[in-house]
Image (cartoon, rainbow, N blue to C red; front, side):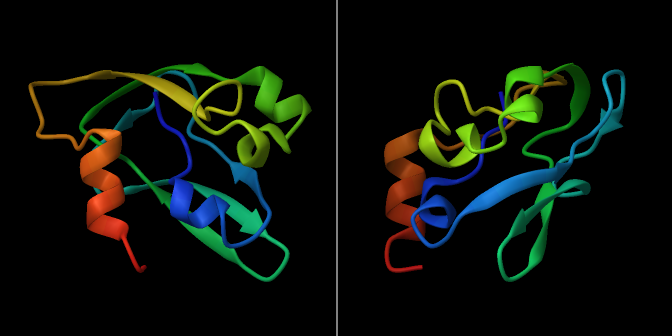
Length: 100
């Protein structure tokens, strides 16, 4: 499941502007959508190689969920991951972005 990183959420209000389509094949690190804030538009990057299998229609209808519940109801899309990439858990990601 792809969600907006917590350190971005704490900085300003964001809303998903563009997501990958169901069935899209995405590659780790490639741009797969956009997210808007009141001041800018930023790219969404694929967390791993795989195929998008679901878009969160609730977050499409109520984009504020991305800010209020990014690790729950505010997820952006689900994907079927190819292989076994090295992904960070929440604690490792927090340590990596501390002070960012």
